[in-house]
Length: 256
Image (cartoon, rainbow, N blue to C red; front, top):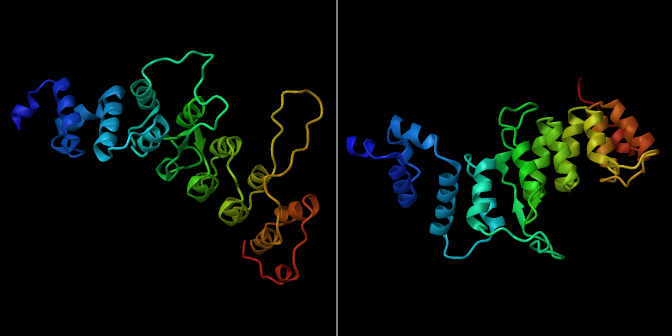
């Protein structure tokens, strides 16, 4: 083991890229420290090598980024390195890829949102913004039955919720699970954010009234009655015009 420890760092990186073993950095504290400081380019090359080793099929940049996002080490700098590796030649500005076509989609894995909190030190928002600004693919924010939005609402992470909604997240997925969570939190602010669309036009004066993302149902009203979220019930009934059913009025409310 002393021989391995005596090798130059650059050679250790090449050995790791050749072996593709996730256990090599765990052999000793020294190796763990070395590989913890691996440059983004080496990390990107490791991810690319793993994908090429696991499949003989040619995969595009969007699929490569999708798989890379499953690795905790995949930060903005690693994504940038993946772009340089997969698309080494810059494209002319007047010849953008997928012009007039639907670009491929990058699926956001569950692990990005699994540990969300209202103010998380590992907030994925900068990475999400970076991914959304790439012209060669779009983000699929509704994969896994809207898991991303559901977890963001559960964590009451408003910036992530706004980002997902702005990029087409559907609150009605999985029987309006995201809205039901907001109702159970008794948060009228969250419910309104999920239901109503914001007018993002830069024009001055009166804001346009946009169609809601979700049509309020009697089941949602019944859920609000059940948890005794009276301001939400009032919002559903008076502003959205959805009256509760007879059975909902007979449902006992949850204790405060």
